[in-house]
Length: 194
Image (cartoon, rainbow, N blue to C red):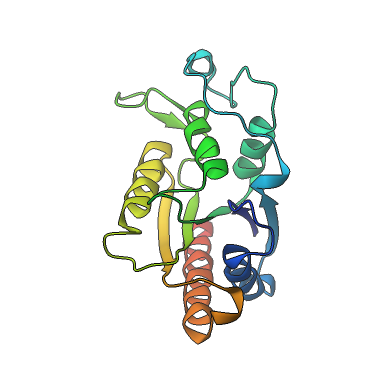
């Protein structure tokens, strides 16, 4: 199975990348893993023009940036892992632009014609933050749940690594969380393939 991981940090070798490395190592023996670093592509903010809502069989965004190519990779993947450092209780700005552009993956939201190009796709969230989870990293988890519901994806894991200030400080707790996230994604893929 093919798993797309999206590194939402502007830092290619920061804490989020370090924990995502652990997750990818856990998955590598069982799946093909492809990483997309959001900082290496250009994703503009959503224009709110709604032109994409007239297209149902592909991402119909009119912007000429890399977002549609990213969405095509997501659509062909068997599962997606969104990873981001916590910025102001939410995704990084780079990842937030991609999240907002998910609008072009969905049509008919709130109606009986609600369709999504990532429907039933297993998805997981990986977050690193410098503080605690409670009162700090709870909002990003709610946003992720709602993005999955909107896109009809299956949220199979939400992992937050708290008090993560330096890559060297990440110990067995981060490795255990990485193993669990990888196990949950693998389990969801096994269920989905039946």
